[in-house]
Image 1 (cartoon, one colour):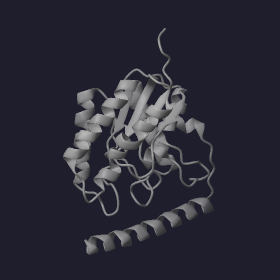
Image 2 (image 1 turned 135 degrees about the vertical axis):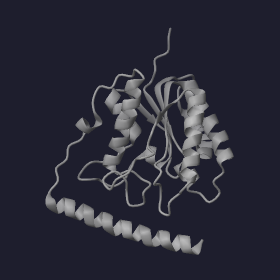
Image 3 (image 1 turned 90 degrees about the vertical axis):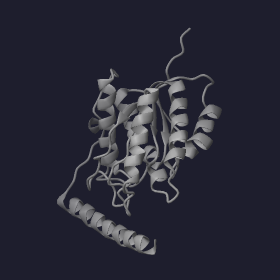
Amino acid sequence: MASIALGVLAFGDSITNGGGELQWGVALQSWALGVARATGLPYSAYAVDRAHVHDVLAEQIPAFVQRATPGARYDLGCLYIGVNDVRSVDWDPARFERDYREALTFVLTRCDRVLTATAPLDLGRPRAGAKVSQLNTIVVSVAGEVGALVVDLTDFGGRNRVMADRVHPTAFGQIAIAQRALRVLSADGMTVRVDPTSLIRYETTRLERLRWDSTYAYRATKTAVRSTWVKARA
């Protein structure tokens, strides 16, 4: 008897883990959860805040092996990792590539499709800079080598989509990532049942928009000051 695929399986860091403040009343939920809801599939997540690729290998995959039904298979595996790695002072492209290939290969052994993603070029404050291009080259190369799909987030950004730290997506940013992921999956033949934007409801007022803009401006200024201090100290 053929095994039944169990839906969407996700690994990664805080971007895939989701959670955070509301944006105009919309909860900040993982892009991978948005993909699961839009395709009508169950969702299983092992992503952890602040994770590096080594944490996927040392903690998240072992947790999955321990908790999941032995031999369980999934329709789709999601692995978005590398943002914390590339922002670290000890960024090591060769080490990342080795660990990333191992993690992605494992996900492929349990999933009919695997989806990964590049990182925005304008990443972090202080900016991660040229290291992001190194990360993205590795992601695209390894994904092509093992047969995974890639969501291109190199140009991802915008005040309503990314928080002032230029790292974490807002609630609407998570939805936008899910939409990009679903376009990739649809082109690969996967059935997409609804647009993620149809699953949320919100209303805004002029006062709420002003409050949002003011809060963002304050946080952006605070982040810029801290970024300048970090660079000066370095």
